[in-house]
Image (tube, rainbow, N blue to C red; front, side, top):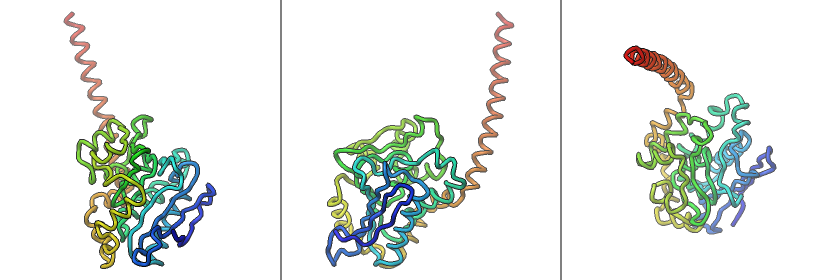
Length: 272
């Protein structure tokens, strides 16, 4: 394995290492990005900046090919957001998280997420914004668990699952906060296969992914393919306005419902 470059993650003392995992001249355009940002690859501003820089480096300094991402932390691919930091960082969603999702959604080369361990919440969302996913067959769960701690998902967090999953898998993932182990993940369509780096390389070779970006329109095709999700990612303030209007309608509906219930109870009591 040949190291091409390393991007530091200053806030955690971690790094993102880009390497060629095959040491083959015929496969020199396969890039492995290994994240190591202790303790569990939380998606913080500095970590996201490092990922984006690594993607820029590959796109603008190396031949077009395929990008594989994985974690250097055995237990986790990513444990999602540092919620406290995300809430205290002004503009975190549109300036960092949505930018990260958008970059993977429209990246001008095939992207494969090699899920070595757990991917929870925003960590799993990031995996879904890749083109393909390979999951460790023996350890690691995939889960959107915001329901369990009362944090509602915003539109860009939902849209990618809606586009890529069947309605029943989407329901189980979001409304049951179901934890998917490897066999269930394949059955639900969350991943394209099970294994490790060798299986990811096999997927690349069998599908001829190394050459898919050579014509220069791979990113454009993804923009059209995922136009709905891209519009949601780019419409942050419109999404917030929609949510505010919806909450106002819900408040009014609640008042009307309580009034109707109160009237019904009074009428029932008068008859007794």
